[in-house]
Image (cartoon, rainbow, N blue to C red):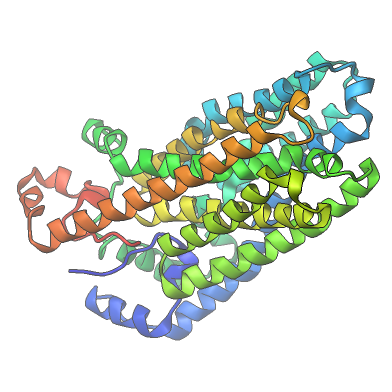
Amino acid sequence: MSKEINSDTIYLLDSAGESDREVQSGGLEPNQALDDRITRKIDLHMIPIMVVMFMLAYLDRSNLGNAKIQGMLDDLKMVKNDYNIASLIFYVSYIIFEVPSNLVLRKTSPSTWLSGLLFFWGVSAMCQGFTKSFGGLLLAFALVKIDGVGGYAGWRWIFIIEGLVTIFLNGEEKARLTARLEHDAAGGLARMDAFNTPAFKRIVGDWKIYVGALMYFGAVNTGYVIALFLPTILKELGYTSSKAQIYSIPVYIVAAVCILTIATFTDLTKRRYPFILIGCSIATVGYCVLLAQANVHVGVRYMAVFFIAAGGHSTHPITLCWLANNVSGHYKRAISTAIQISIGNCAGFVGSNIFIDDDAPAFKVGYGVSLACIWLTVVTSSIFVAGLKWENRKRDKGERDWRYSLPADEVKNLGDEHPSWRFTY
């Protein structure tokens, strides 16, 4: 049994011809009209909510960088590397609470949990505006990130759909979606519905999670650099504070267009690895220009910022979904993605401490380390695709069929280690 299996519900209900053939092979009756209706309802009811949630989360997260060049450092009497420390503390609680938050989301109503996180995220972010000291800023920023785990809720589609699907799907549609989700897991065979000792060992012992975390680490560093230091970078290019704020807007617009374009093509082609290389190549050009900025016109340096933002922001979502595509089972997917994000977000410790005021305006350390992080993603993604191909060949040859002889309860809970599962790249 060889096929590409994907955990993303939108993709799962996508591609009529290929989907019908897979459905037939898995014993599920094809019903493209029903599948299309479910997809439209999810698109109309779910995606706008997730877009707004993510937009608000990112807006609050990036406000610190804008506030820095508008007088925050002087008003709070922040000196030397205080801003870097404030940026660093942002990620501590995020990393600590990511896995527990994901497990809570599995047990409670996603609508309640995510709404609560978003509310307290906003309250904590608002409190930053009332702080009168550096210490108060640290506390508010740390609290923001505790609740900020909801800001990355987009990848939790599987749980959101399970919890919110009853709001807008009728009985027939809900049953169909449930059947399609089961079919997605190698025809319902590659499941992990029980969280026990063997399951735990399989999860924490899976090399894919840690290589995926390093992929994400390298790519998301650029995201944090852009969020925390873009206004500073633009100001050091020679623009005033107000112009730096304005000139940052086109950077995000172009990055958004690139993200959507690359996301569309990666979904249409059902490939992840080539588009990671494309994004990293674009970001590499930008970093190289800024490393040589002493001999480059300011307009070209500004263009380089577009390259960095477009390449970096286009890459790190692919690293997230690529791992999710290649793990199966409720608990395996929930915990593996949370571990990936927890480890990967340690890049926040790096990104928040490599752009030091003493290095301005060249910021050679910042650009050099960020370029190295981009190439960490190139190397680890290459290892990832090589490992997936190697494992698929093993399964095609029947070299994993011995797992069928394990105890029946364990075979039913293998997740993506089930011999029938095939990896995608």
